[in-house]
Amino acid sequence: MLRRRSLLSAGAAVPVIAGAGRAVAVPSSSDRAVAPGLRLARVGGAVLGARVRVRGPLTERMRTTPFRMVAVTWRGATPEVEVRVRDLRGGWTPWRWLAPLGDGPDPGSGEGGAVRGTELLWVGRADGVQVRSDGGSDDLSLVLVDPGRLPGDATVEEQTAARTTARYEATSLRPPLLNRSEWGANPKWRSGTPRIDDTIRMAHVHHTATANGYTRAEVPGILRGMYYYHTQSLGWSDIGYNFLIDRFGRIWVGRAGGSQNPVRGAHTLGFNQNSVGVAVIGNYVSTNPSDPAVGAVVRLTAWKLAMYGRNPTGKISMTSQGSDRYPAGQRVYLPVIDGHRDTNDTACPGARLYSRLPDIRTRAKRRIDYYS
Image (tube, rainbow, N blue to C red):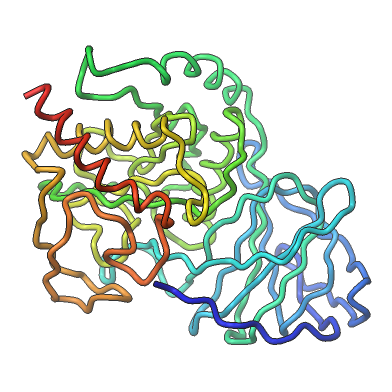
């Protein structure tokens, strides 16, 4: 499991370079100072974004236009990074560690590049940010995103609240899905065409390491923010996950290419081929996943695995394409429904969700048997 190293002690604030397309010098001063404001730029639909180049172990407290999501990207060695934000009432949150992102396209896939990043953290509505790091990388960039609110967000909330809590067992193995258009995916951000594999051999379960207290109406915005980050900041061809599940039990289509097809994602570095990536929105290191979310994982994995005759309670041999845990070419014997930590050096999908996987496997098998 990935272990966090101690950050260097925070001393006096140091200069940063900030802005979208222009450099702004920020003088050093005491930790209580607030740097000149940073305005997020419109990048498509209701989404606002900004990329802030960071130098030194501690930035100034930066004023910003309101944002809701934050991450850090870099090239080269993996840094240790923490952030804190200012809520709209003017109070600063405690420092929060940004976990390195274990998701990503496989080496040699032609997708992505040298840019790596942390998980994209949902912070609610904030208008200030400060970053500190261990100085492990000299090419840090802070990413701020405000996914906004589209008129369709409220429509999705109203139309799906009842039907996503109903029982589907008596109707179809295929669960109800919410499509990309329903969360407002901007087609212009995609690059290339979806890669379709010949089969699905297994399912990888993730969490998104974001906050857990989001509302129904905020979920489409969370997906737009992740889509923006994966494509515009990390250079992936599309959002990494094939499907995402919120705490209300709704299943959202992620990566394009057809929900019924074996679309190769960018969710499990080294093990994307012939698999499906399912992410539960939230952080389940110390919080239990909701029963509706767990039920949705059962329904989705049963449907996808049944198409290809896979046994959810079985194991299968997979060949690594090169991950941070298994070198390229190594064969690994994995559960057909596994957790991200089984293939990569990560805490994902969180201990509380990982502990539910035996139950998810059993229930998915029972569901497939019921319909077979």
